[in-house]
Length: 122
Image 1 (cartoon, rainbow, N blue to C red):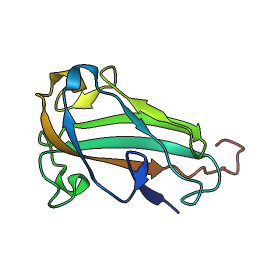
Image 2 (cartoon, helix red, strand yellow; image 1 turned 180 degrees about the vertical axis):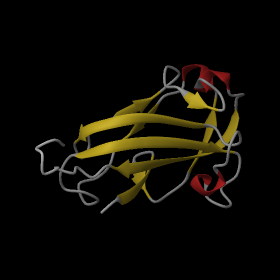
Image 3 (cartoon, helix red, strand yellow; image 1 turned 45 degrees about the vertical axis):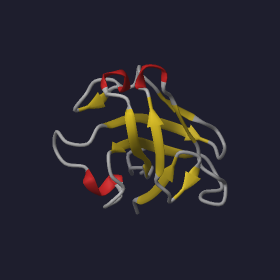
Image 4 (cartoon, rainbow, N blue to C red; image 1 turned 90 degrees about the vertical axis):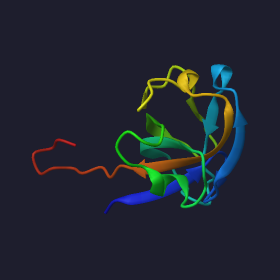
């Protein structure tokens, strides 16, 4: 069964307002062991929006909200995952291409489920 765990920057289920100059910005994303006791593998997507209504993840549409994603492999509770100017995004390639300003930021952790096939492959 697929699980979706929403993670805001260091705080669960919240949207963070940031005043950002993107040239040197980095986001460190982690989750608390109360959300998941063991390590998680999946995809972390950071959504950056100008408004928090509706929440940033609900504003995602083709070529609209800037999103940046990284793979998380066996990420332990409290361990940080970094999204910075080297992280590829869409519709812009880098955080450094966004103008300075006030943004609402939300991270989404799409947890992958490991499936073991009868032929022994995972």
